[in-house]
Image 1 (cartoon, rainbow, N blue to C red):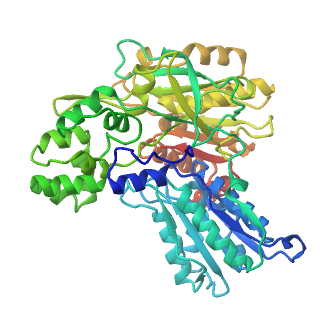
Image 2: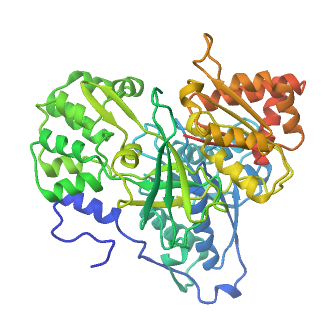
Image 3: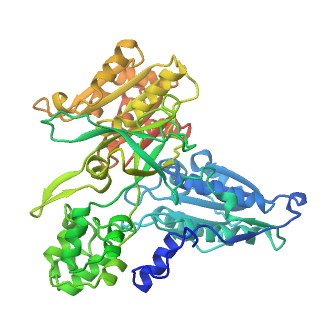
Length: 564
């Protein structure tokens, strides 16, 4: 049996069987191109990517490989490497873009999008384009960035080569179909055979084939009386052939909590080893899909749920703290057969964590800094899927299936003499621990400044011993701390930025890089506002001049964020 196929007797409904078969399918289809394509004149095809974590960039490179194999001349660039004037000169454009946050453009696309969406943008009647959009259907504004680009280019008079394709988290098959359709149509009818294997990852271990790693260290970082539980993990990748850079993410494929699986089986009045295995290993059993929510509302007659499903904000408030089991227990008249229930679930997704070690300093291990999610709600104890898989269900005998996601933008600068400023409260410190290890390994002479904070210094000052040693040795030039609950008036990292704004602006003027990691919805926005304020005040700039200054930092990849 092909390892990507499900056995014919797999215990799923017909629709779910088809779904899972696609989920595990490899990229087996073949592309057709010209055997003599190397002798043909190469038509330039511009490929722009908007990427927050690296997935869209990786896919864009797959598009470029395919285009080159067809005798085309792919010109691949990040969206922050192109301005509106350059875009107006392009005649063939392929866009691969993710959607970030609540329907927003990725960071590297913001400046170009602002130009393109403005009234001064010229018409693009000469342009033909196609768009591959990446998203997650668990968010309301699914693939919104791709939709916005598609609509705006049409408004500007550009012509579609192919209808936009919107990919969910299981993007490989749809993306490959898009590549196999769009690229041959650009190349014409002459062909030489290449296969999807030509665009696969170099490593044998990837999203479809995770490496079975072993956990070496599981250490509690927060004190016993802390209101949080943050842990340090060290995972062995010895013998895998895998390597990583500081700034990359490790994606962990977790197993669902057996106790939660048992409770869900009881709630739907079902049993069976195969079903139990599927709920443990293959399906998301915490966050309900929209399809499941709708069916629970209909089958239970729950008018409140039916009402909030029509309002994004109300639904978000309603679901806060609730999981699938809560919904089943609160709506006992909504009954499902095992097949019906499985068909309404989403596949279990890996969880991505910013790596807290340098691959050069630690070639055989990868370190993670993870906050364990635990809370009580609706008369039940709730746990995060992957954070407590690592904390509670993993020991030295457990396989930790994992793979790396590169983040080629979130990198220590090549120039070892340039200063770097790192803002990472809480577990946002993770990549900056890696950055500092990297700078130490390189013998970099550039200054290093870390803004860190959490709730209380006595219980939440994680990696304190390491940071104090780095500070004493001179590796860490400045360490500014913001523990919000240690005084009557809360103090955050953005407050410390403003307090030391003159020196902060000075470091940036020296060519410094500004990095942010952590919460996207509050911290990152507050830090961004503080950065603009510091530049306006200490750079003696107007509000618009400060915006332009920050946009230039972004374009030069000197202001980079790893936020979630």
